[in-house]
Image (cartoon, rainbow, N blue to C red; front, top):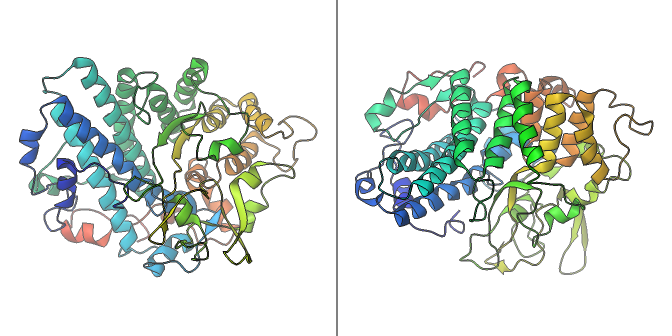
Length: 470
């Protein structure tokens, strides 16, 4: 990850000095006293805020928690021989996860270390003697990030320890798992506060906005079954006219076409040199080969089931899936892998590749499909299909096998948002994970729709309970 973190600050030192022996949450850094003298000026908070946004790189890394859960545990992708601890990685694909899985523990650490950065900014900015407007916007941004992380955590683990301020090791020991209902209540509270503090547009590219907070809030409401409030939030974003579909789906993935009108919240990368915070999606999703001069990691390799899901004539298939690669000798190797983050102009650096792709967390097509889910109105879904030049739902030419709005949405979200870390979460939200995935040979049951609490966490604090089934 060293290539991503460009700004070295006190926050970075905080994260680097955490030790697992002090607290199951690892939220009490040795360098804590530095916080008392650092958070004073707007410059201090600028540095801290940049560091907080940098945590997105870890959480949404192609081998990070949202990728492993959102894609590898669903039915779009697989992995074959992949570098690192293969057995632990295969456990996600095969629904054989164990509490001793090293990746699960790493993901737990990643989230709580990221939350520490966010919580300390919220704690220190409230009494700071700085511009009120700047303070309010920064608070809104941090509340958005905290909500985004807890939303992913509660969907991945269910009940988790709820930490909303910096805590000592002794305090952390007494923070046990909060019920998921309390986690969702905190997320909704934070996002309502964030949307009131955030501007419609930001002068700094990549920062959270009111539209991002409302879109995330709409998805949270959908996940909790509150379609009325989901529709309200999503419709306000729709009516704002801040966002729109690009005419061409393929243009979304052009490395030169960043932060478009379709993007609601996007993680920023800058390729080209080893010192830039370059993107790893191209490298990680390339087949496990060094044929092009860099080590492809072989993550999220495309399976035939999603390949066959695309309708005849759907140009999104070609834009989303590559079918192979040609090596330096002109030899073609057939392999299906995600194409959206390809950057063939990126320079090779020490058998890596400094790609320039951003990663879109929330985009307008997602919002349109959620609006149909919240309201039952198919006009929003049909906006997405119209862009793809496909028969509209409700017309005679529409595929008959998707003969309900729910099935039409399931199909459309799968092909429109393929490989963007949505699929598993979508299936869980609509209570379709077990029937869909078991039909495709996945050994999944209700308890397995949550990850285990890591053994190390429970070794450090025996009062932390384990999820059922583990």
